[in-house]
Length: 466
Image (cartoon, rainbow, N blue to C red; front, side):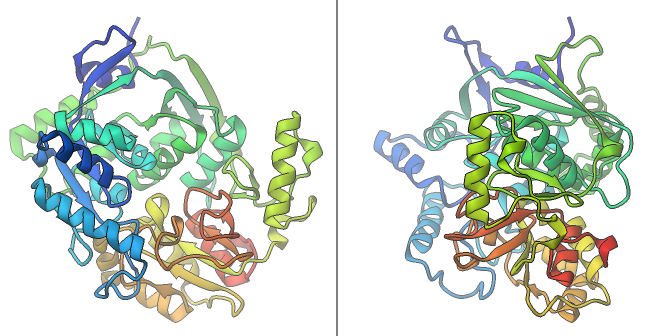
């Protein structure tokens, strides 16, 4: 029996097989941010342990970072304290840190690929569930908890039970205007928020092959929203082209050797998956979430569903609660739902390709008077590129607020960027839970192009509607 891609990467990193069902895995790259790390460093100090491999560890400030006045002190005292602790901890343990204002600072899941740190065949961990983003490179990347962060800092290893394997095959060709964001929302709507629980998902098929690296990152980013441990895509020519333009890549014969190894990282033809899902890429259309989890999504051309449309009482109860929280009436056409705000950004859709898609829709148009639109780059590098390409000018002419700082912003609402109670937003982030973007906020997850069209029309809309 052959091996899956995930099994190959997992097996290559086993330091010691566990008798209790857990393997001890070696960690190639450990990424940190300021929110979930202070207790881990306290644990190191309490036991007198150093960081085992600070050279394989990198910190960044992203969740609490202000996006307007990045040269000013962080206003929220809790956020300010977390950032201060991050700086002190990284200094005390010799860990490099990308602080606010650093030219390479950004959202942790954006800068890993951007800086050429995420590569095929690696194990990558971070104190954040959306670490799955970097599985787009054929890496085994997943989020870990605070106690696990301490373990990795101290040993550069992590005991983990082996997940099961799941294949998601997307055949056919995505239609014009359909993006990776729409595809992953359609998938989660199909399998549910627990559909991938306990599995590493491998995405494959002609529709996946056709995605850009940034589209693949969006897909793997939201894998966790289906309950999955990680998402992976086998490296191919698209992967190599992206990596060849990253800093720190090997050159000459060493690049050739690495590329040959990377291209061999794929599931064997006779590999057996524990679970398989097949989608027709040609049948996917732009999707929008209507409820309070990503599985509660429907095509933009559809209507708000009623509780009676769901098969089980728990699903019907969840629908009733979501409808009440979101202030929606069953049967309402999705395109008739007005919004107060539009947010473009996050580790899901804060890359340059996403900003280009937004600019393409906004060019020559104006944001509706009833809507405030905020665009936050995923990294300082993305912002510089957006300025260099003239995208920032497009945003300014359209009346969108293109922020000066990079970070998680309204996705996590841990800084000043948040919705007011009862406000409704079309957002390119990954989660629409109750209160996710501010207490009482109402979030509709959309693609960047749909976000831009919505900003112009004042209601949920696709570019074609304009």
